Amino acid sequence: NGGTYGFGPAAVRVDPGTTVTFKWTSNTHNVLVQSQPDGADWGGHEPIENEGFTHTHTFDTAGVYTYYCNPHLTMGMKGAIVVGAPPSGTTGGGGGGAAGSSVSPASTLWTAVFAGAVGVAMLVPVAVSYYRRTPAPDSSGAFDYEPGGDTDDQPAIPEADAFEPDTELGHDEYDPVGTLSIVAVYFLILVGMWAFTYFIEFLGNGPTIMG
Image 1 (tube, helix red, strand yellow):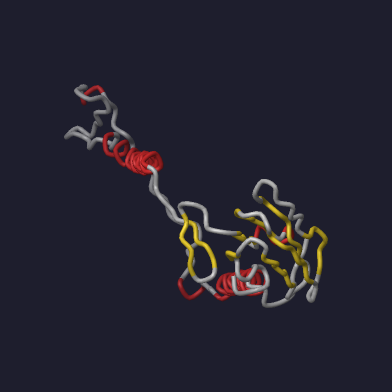
Image 2 (spheres, helix red, strand yellow):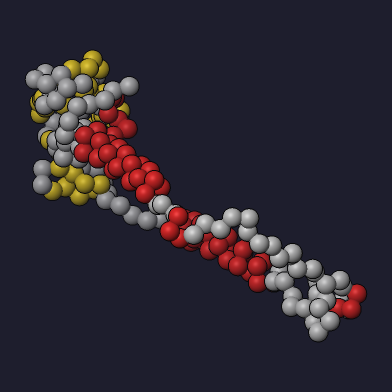
């Protein structure tokens, strides 16, 4: 991610028997094994270490090894090592392996069903509002609420009583400075929180907040 919360490179492919060294370039990281081939004996490095620490392991068993940093797992600090030839369905290049992707017919069907359900859910309120519109009154002022019913049997809806305001607030008496100040303060708070979260916490360009 361009900061201190990512392994670099995130994925590599090496030959069996290659020794890989992990070097800590920032603080509060570890290396935990998520998955590895059968028969592999890599244990990772669970203790939290700081800048300058190194962890070395020789990968003899062919297969795919995945690992992560536990303190920063939620921030996407994960990696992979492919030992030997890439598994079937992947393509190699540039010193690493990139998994190929394919879309199954079942997933396409469920995507279409989900999209259709969302579309129906959005159209239902429109259809209901169209068929439940309030009917216009007839010449006598009565409303026909029942399809095919007799409008003469329906009472007219009385209008609300007219009223005058107790106090009129003139345009010159309205002062928007206070409201505008509150909006500006909240806007600055949101901008500051966004900048802190993105530039400092996510990209690692400042102090790290743990806990």
